Image (cartoon, rainbow, N blue to C red; front, side):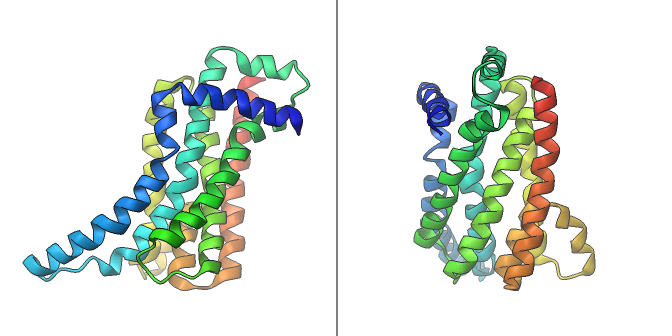
Length: 236
């Protein structure tokens, strides 16, 4: 554990010197503030001018806030991993007492745990819909596992930070599951159930807690295992 914390500490020094990775740390809080104060103002403006309300969309924005909080933090770690791979530090850690799993836990696991806690706190502070604490915790679990899977997807598919930025933009497509879960009632919406964000939407809208949490966790684990194996093969 001491070695894992040491690897994490070394990584944090690198993050604090990099503008992009540093910005991603407070980004979840900024997202929460923006949603909490800008959306109600925009809603009032639209009601006055066009009688259109954003309130039915509030659960979706809360789900988006839950997903983005751990995902943005793990994405910062993914960029750090890519930078270390560029510099050959990944190979260095392989010949030290640190195993692959220790290395990945230091780089992805610890930020993910912090992201999970932040997701709960930020949602309780800034949520616009009536989302319970138990639903918040359950959705945060899936969102955190999704954030880990996204980080592994970035580092397994990209060879450097430039490619990593491109891959991270494409991950926005995976958020479609949240929107489909909230707005589509037809049976074809289950085609998007392969996306972890779909299960966050299911938790928020359907309230079928335990089966949804289990299925969402299994989907996230599938993504995580798939891309982790690819990443370990790439650096081996």
